[in-house]
Image 1 (tube, rainbow, N blue to C red):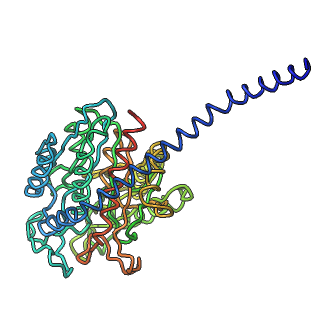
Image 2 (spheres, one colour):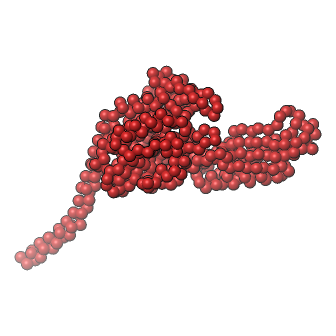
Image 3 (spheres, helix red, strand yellow):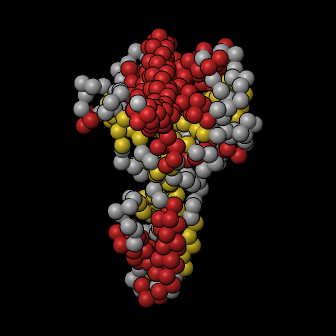
Amino acid sequence: MLKLNKANKKNSYKKNIITATLLPLLLLTSASQSIQAKEQLSIKNVATMATQIEADVIKWRRHFHQHPELSNREFETAKTIAKYLNSLGLEVQTGVAKTGVVAILDSGRPGPVVALRADIDGLPVTENVNLPFASTVRSTNNGQDVGVMHACGHDTHIAMLMGAAKILTSMKDKLHGKVKFIFQPAEEGAPRGETGGAEVMVKEGVLTKPNVDVIFGLHISSDTEVGTVNYRSGGIMAAVDPFKIVIKGKQSHGAYPWNSVDPIVTSAQIIMSLQTIVSREVELIDSAAVVTIGMINGGTRSNIIPNEVEMVGTIRTLNPDIRELIHKSVHNKANSIAKSMNAQAIVTLPLDYSYPITYNDEKLMTEMLPVLQATAGVGNAKVTNPVTGAEDFSFFQEKVPGLYLFVGGRSKDMSANQAPDHHTPEFEIDESGMKLGVELLTNLTLDYMSNHK
């Protein structure tokens, strides 16, 4: 009996130890499952609400599509946006970076400040799509009469962010912190002689008062299937640095070239040398880069060697170190070759504007990836290759962690080869793709607030 009692006590002690060890794990697992269930419930709720307002989102998009305005001229667009945001009871500021609109949703509870951004400008493109709401607007762009069209989907961006604002405002009692809705003008570039866009918004303090902790943005994509979201950690869109090289030589008669310092021959050697920067100096296995000369001007007639030649080009990079390397190499090659030809090279880099790399914060991307996957569905959140196009959303990302995503806007019955390019008269998107954009903006906000309250 004594031995049996001791054995029972020992077994009872072991049982207590096992219970004490496993109970917290069981409780943690149960809590984790409960949290996951709540997250799934929240995502389903957002999907339901997005479905309920989808008709409104489409209506808003069609209004903006039919009434596009050029960069820094989005006056009526801004009025429409501001009027709607005021109707939601938000704190609204207009005239930001000339025509931008910013609104704040304050939950009244402590937490992070999440910024959501949409660009609002159209392009000097004459629409060639047979739609009942096609644009017939004409305007003046840098002194030229032009058609105006939302040929890059900014009309959908406005509508999607307005939809997210509607849902988040209706969920105010569940939020922790503040949401800052940023409707940005002039993403496509300000008119000649003006400044604009995200860079000006940042300078004017759009990321302060209150200080923004994180920012999310997205772009509709005409060649990405509806229901899909494309993402990438790190550089997703390139930095853009236009540059100009002026070669100064000595003019002479074309029949007596030995009396000249020929800037045309010099510029030709420089152009060929610039092409070796990417092919021979950049580790392309890490990231792509581009050095392009797009314009060259010099001379007046066939029998005169001119005094100077001007070249204008662009540099695209996806890595900050490679960006610096290329900048140095352009200077070195231009100056060294010019000197070897007894000419002078004057390099202006950057020329008139410069966009940083659109860079998705790695830590933030890892944190938010489950939200993308849960919102879009299994297999619909896909890693994408970087593109050498540029986006001034990058100015926001220079200051605070941010994510920039691509949302599908191509009809499922259309192949990628059939999809019309952005910035063309034939550009068109499937409006059903906007619902996912509304859900993503909303769920990213809710998840980040929940994790950082």
